[in-house]
Image (cartoon, rainbow, N blue to C red; front, side, top):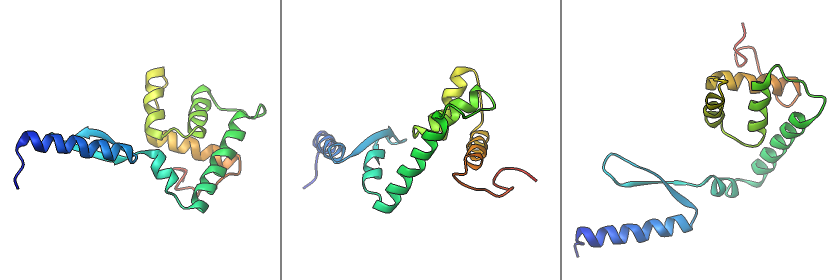
Length: 135
């Protein structure tokens, strides 16, 4: 049985509603006006292995404690903002866009290096010179 275009669109909308209820969300339309679905971040986190989820929670908890410690010194306000937002779970691209809007523009690579510098200073992670963009 072949569906008409109207019937197909109705079935497609019903299908996307089911996907949304299951934790997927429509993020954009591609060139052919068909919707693309992408799993929500909550679902990705929920479906993570327990060990990985606990490790990620501990990592961000350590970052949060270090950022909010009153003895912590930051090089400038941009560094403080970057580390605060990152400890809250914001992605680097989001932080970059927010900094641009605040007039403190930083490239994504620069943000990555700033995060690594503070992780090293707080003894949360360690990196080699190449990962820190040093010679």
